[in-house]
Length: 237
Length: 237
Image 1 (cartoon, rainbow over the protein chains, first blue to last red):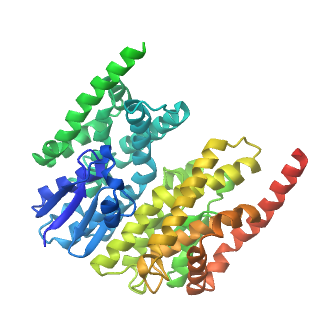
Image 2: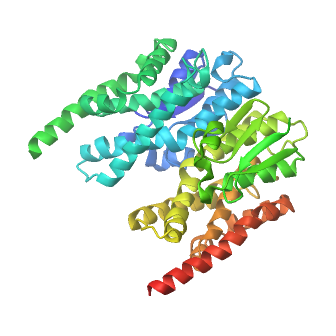
Image 3: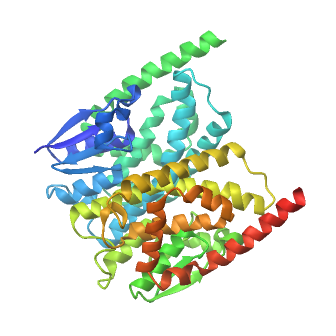
């Protein structure tokens, strides 16, 4: 039975898993769960993932969610996966776990908050909370600073590795989500972080051509969202 | 060289690691980093862990932080660790990873927010943010509901296991932190969750006598904090 990946290319961890499967020649069926239209909340999908989140994989009769866990599972299950993705050395593996764990309450939390308050709420005509927006940006900038000065200090990839691990894939997909901000805001937040920007480019190159292929939906949405928000703010002026 | 565990028994992930080491006969030196007195922010400690958080382990010349990563590393490094803590079976291990990943943005986020707003800020005479307190409680109650109805549905331990894994140790230590709330609040939040309460007791029993030994500091603090906050609120009336 083919591995099923329930996902939406608009979701950063979904993209990480799709790129990973394509890079490693894993045969899978992509099942689109349209999160902008709340398809993750349908009873059908909740029967698969009661948390109503993407991505989820179904491998035979085994269902798994949480993207870090999925990437580890796939790395271990498929012998063809190159060892740099999830190193078998105890210490190298521990470092990959450490940056993945750090990600949850830092980069991801900041990025999700910033996109929610600056893009998704305004797009849906809902009031954003200025205090929440400010705190999310603080969390995001702090996380980008830690990426720049600590996790990438021995680069080119996270924890000083010479080839990307599953952590690079997951965290770069998160940084890419910031493309949904307007260009000025995107550059204002990201431009001070030269190592982060270089690392994004290095990860893109290391995962070509799949990285750009899978991010196509995000690039298209980014263009549309920027135009819509600009039109809304022009109307409000 | 003996494994060093930099920690504070007032921190929930620190307690999980201490109990784990004791349960598995791992020889270690406990180095107390007094978080209530901001010792995690000293230059000496920042040289060990630039994130200024506990716990951290130093094993020879390898430094590791993030408690989930530490528990996985210790489980793999010491051959004496019983296999139920971190199962070697691919699917069983994936389930343990999944609940640990879920923990970050759900149970932990809710619990930390509730304790910050209801205990630590009032204790330090700082204003708490009613909206943040309400949101933290919502996150916490939702996480407890998911524990009760999903992760513990096939009990007695998380993901339907018959013996505790590192996930039980970590998540139960988090639930224990709620002891810092006053008794009424603690019971109001936790009493609807019968399976969660039973699971806490089962984890305590499975890790006796170390569970209670390591939680002694928390129990003492709980008593003191409850008295202090009661005295403060009496003065304010």
